[in-house]
Amino acid sequence: MASVEQTFDPFAVAEVETVRRDLARVRAGGCPVTGVAPGIGFVGHHGRAREALLAHEALSNHGNFVLEAPGDGPAPPDLITQSDPPHHTTLRALLRPGFARAAIVEAAPWVREYVDELIDALPVGGPADLLGEVALPLTAGVIARLVGVPEADADALSRDSLAITAILPAPFTGTEEWARLERYFTEAAQHRRAVADPPDDLLTRLALGEIDGRRLTEQEVAFHAWQLFVAGLESTAYTIGSTVHQLLLDRSRWEELLADRSLLDNTREEGLRHGSAIRWVLRTVAGPSELIGTAVPENGRVIVGLESANLDEEVFGPDAGEFDMRRPSARRHLSFGHGIHLCLGAELSRTEISVALEALLDRMPDLRLAPGFRYTDVASPMFCGPARLDVVW
Image 1 (cartoon, one colour):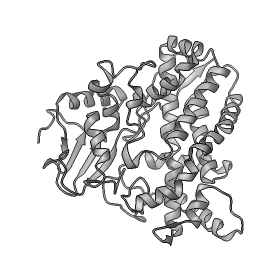
Image 2 (cartoon, one colour; image 1 turned 30 degrees about the horizontal axis):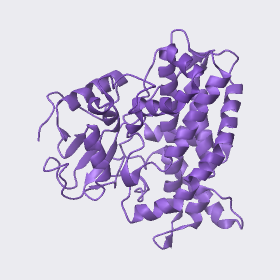
Image 3 (spheres, rainbow, N blue to C red; image 1 turned 90 degrees about the vertical axis):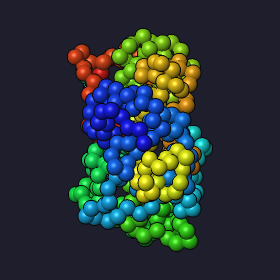
Image 4 (cartoon, one colour; image 1 turned 180 degrees about the horizontal axis):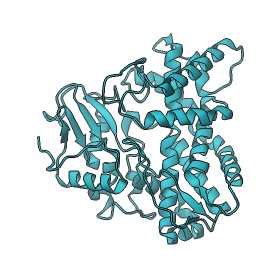
């Protein structure tokens, strides 16, 4: 197996420029699978990453996002992001109606109302942290409503969820944050099962539905409900933040979008590509694969570099590292994954991003980065996005 000449750690917490320089070096090495450690491979090219995401039999989704065996605390069940068919298929079918096209179209007006409320609460003219005061509260509020979490609880759940995702791929079930989250969602499941007329939300579907012919345990409901909550929280918020940052970094882009709203959809897709909020996903080698060959042993791990794939010069052009709201290939990004594990909430995320951009353009047309603002990436090995986004208007 070929390897890179310098040390490459895909789990390192580093500034985005450093990470992307390393990823470019890995892609330039021409390795289908690059060795980063014994028993661990990294797939960084767009075509190979796409193949890996499609190879669900040879590359199991089990253990996705967690590199090591669980420590103290309960072992996560087969979550939708960490399971294989047929269990994955059944679980996805149970949850799919909550993310159906009609449900997302119906959600758009109240998503806009929520964005407007958050903008109304900002100090007149700023400065304000657009990520912390608009993007994260928006995504937390939207997914809370769909899951079935009272709006008053969304902030506390968000804080604990952010603390957990900050340590991934390390085990998290032994943490104080998980103990609180598990207790909260277990009690919510118990309530759904005790009332005569529970609300029509994802938590009720999990609590009352059946998977593989049996009802989920309360602990399983807690894991699944939290996973839905956290999946709808960070990545969309970071994409909103990083997209707005790019539009304001060269403010001619913002002005162009103000003048021509037909560019909004492609701008959103370029934001998803360029921002690459989720840097990687994990797979476990379960069988022979031409993609892997003998580079990674059975039960070894493969890191599928979504961020690297989204920056592949062979697919997105020699300027793939730049933000181009007119890029014709923008929608070829892998930010939502690919194949049977394509993100269930992809269209919800797209709706939130579009609605948030529309609202900012409508309500804050003279939006600018705050004087002296310096971009700092969120301190996470898994997520990419601004730690904050200070703006004035």
